[in-house]
Length: 289
Image (cartoon, rainbow, N blue to C red; front, side, top):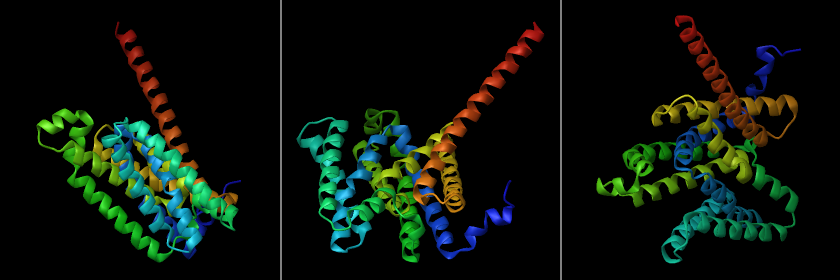
């Protein structure tokens, strides 16, 4: 038995679900833009590491009663700077630097949480977020983060494209590949921190990567891929919130699962379409012969 459309969408008449929808959509727009570059540059590990690298700052802010986003942002910035320092002075590879700091920050966060009196509640909130608790002030912050992400991505677009093709070419053209790389790391940090409230540190990578992967099956142009990734992300937010309401599941996890499902469905539909197109072409050639 299927629900009428009015009953299906009835949850969005509630104020807190409206805020969750708007906030989640803003996160989807930001993650669609940043996630496109993350997928193109193969920086998924950085996104996951930054998401978990927020844990010490978020945990400490929670224990001290301070704003968790401020603590998470500070922790993510420290980790980003640490990765760069290890590369330059420690002469370690990029993934090795990320791996070392990733484990260190995660361990430190767990140690801080384990000394808190509300371990289970705080850990659940940190890992999975609480999109249904988005407040009006959070919407302002998310809108500002999305606007900053759009502006930075637009300004650095040429440099990021050159960096994706070949850093040496970017340097020859005077496009400052190091600055472009720093801007990209900053964008990833911004997206991870801004998405924390919606889906938590554990599931943010799904919303960052899955819509961009889904969009990549339909277009190769970067601007259109960003736009389509944002659309897929918003669709995942809507679907996840509705599933969460009607099936009584965790909202953040439902949104992330919806994003992954959309990526899988996009890949499957495109694969079947390409196979059918190839079969028709082969049949046409055979008939002509």
